[in-house]
Length: 455
Image (cartoon, rainbow, N blue to C red):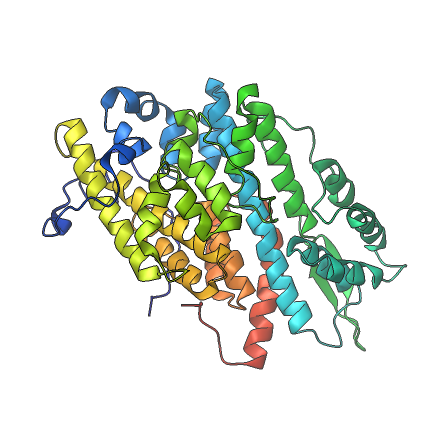
């Protein structure tokens, strides 16, 4: 059983990984095998950046150093100072993903605490928060029923009216202009900056009891607004040529189901790939395809995408085999380490953290394919294995929030609370997800033995 993870963000330099050198002495007894075609692997950003000339612009820029260590705030400031358009766009897109996952975390915790574990004394206004949560979770029939149940004399009735109008004709999360009309203005979109965070709790409702005790509540719409604001900032910062790139990279952490469209291999600049879970431009198209078509995407993309090629042997009898994915991920790490040593003329310190990121990338790709193939448990195994592998080199904040949202959907509040504690001070808008998590924890504790994270 996988141990409970303490979520830590450990800063990295390009030359080290948690005190380890680039010498893969711990793995030296394992023979290097060719996990994928070597020519395909050489197109990956870790292999290409074993070349000092290609890696140099990233190694020498403070924005990329902060990005490498997982600090999106410092990275954004450095990119803004140097007017690095793609750097700013990429960080804004990740911040958009982060707050979208925070909204899903809030929605899942709210649905479990005040929907599944509802009690008679819950304020009637909680129907509004449950309605917004249902929108985020993609249940629009439930959302409409909840919004209709909001008392007409309540503080949130006007917000429920706006939401009903927004989802009347389109079953989708609305655009930024509609979201801020509901939750409040975040100011003009300005690339390189971040919006103000509203104080919490957003509301104070009275319980339906003799004492009518006040209860603080937060609107998940605020997190959706932050996500939409950063998405707009990413679009404003990116070069005009990169509009399709933004759309494609947005598939990985999309909360809403994206349309299944034919994905091309886009000419991605290295600024979109460095330290990414997409090893090559074709991987970005593969992940966008796999998020909806699952197994079919592996066969379709295996001749172009290193990630799809690595997963080929893990598809057995119409299913993703988690252990085979883990084996393939380790094999790719070994092959990539050898490839980088060949390109760079020997082993260097940065090879190991680069190779570990590639290993994690395979695990995440397998997770996405398994999820699309309705293999919930198997996807969970790969999700937690990826989180475990990240532990040595620093947990990526967007992925951490996605794990927290998944945990909350499984009625497990402990790990999400750890994750919010770790990242909440850096990304303060996430505080909006704290109250529903605490409520879920309390109600689970009342109704059953203390929970542990899903393993």
